[in-house]
Length: 228
Length: 228
DNA sequence: GGAATAGTGTCTGTCAGACAATATCTC
DNA sequence: GAGATATTGTCTGACAGACACTATTCC
Image (cartoon, rainbow over all chains, first blue to last red; front, side):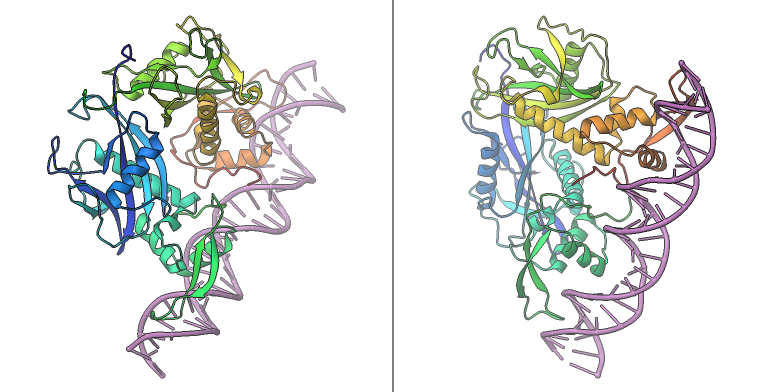
């Protein structure tokens, strides 16, 4: 392999969640140069014998203390502009993870502090490397995928109400949706959600039915985003 | 950089076109091991100072003798399973290109022979490396994108008729579409296509109006694929 | 004129947006 | 009961599928 230009390959993660009406991203504060002290996407180098998805799952587990089963993980894209990392030629494979609100403090094994930050409160140029761009691409991918996949449920706990699911759409899209039309759409699309048979208790108002994520891989017809 | 595991990075291309009612892919016959004599996606190593999109454009130009302007090029995904390349740890960034039918023989600078092969006539396991999988992902991406983008026009020459555009959809999707409903949909969706003001001549039947690709980046509402 | 292809108009069913009405809880 | 939230139902307009019909060319 000495005949081919040597690259380093990293796996970086755009981990999104919905908490308290804010779309938030998991960021770590860098403890070492380059970009020491700056916020960055969690990630790290891919092992020479490690498969790419395995590296992403490993980094996710290391940074969130969470195994993958809940939520959703998919490849987002690969970023490799020369000069994007001052340490050398580093190509990063970025992954998009959608998780329910963990609320519990993020127990990363890394010494560096990690925290959830609302996407709306980040300013361009605030993140290390080209992570602004990667984050923007991840958010846009998530917004688009809510339209034609049942992936919004990945932001919810295993059992959720229609209102919780609607809050996900409203938060990620930054719009308001009519609760009645949304309810009809969600419960009327085959395979989107499945009724659990139980209802919430103790909240204000009429108890809401609980649902689980359904088996449909795609939404037909899609959930339409207002405007556009 | 000696502290990080060394990878080789390649750029591979899924170049699709529509010719004579067949969705076809540009393949090269490998002249050297590994997989000598087998068909493979065109591609090659990324230079140590070369940006990833530049490498894709360069490979496309080398293999097709064509500058990019016509058609469409986007990143498809990155494949890096250990063992996918017997030469060592090679991660490949795959790109999807959609081009009009060049018809002219492919004038690649590579000595290896290159040719267009109908996607439908390839059998699993026929391609080198994991290129079967990459090709399948590319075809699926193209099929999906025809639904919600005006990208079908990337398969057409700069000026085209509604019937030509319909033939693209029918070929890529493998379905038949009602010419009258299709015409209404295409001409009625703002920004999909723009009339040139001239018509075809010399063909059998009533002359058809010519159109150019319109400015809309997305189709709203989408073009619906029959069944599903 | 006949065959072929382009384009328009009509009917109907599906579905989204607007919103009234009802159900069932907490306080 | 008042307030809040969930759920059902109704009306209407947009649009896709089916398909009759007209327009314009080549032969």
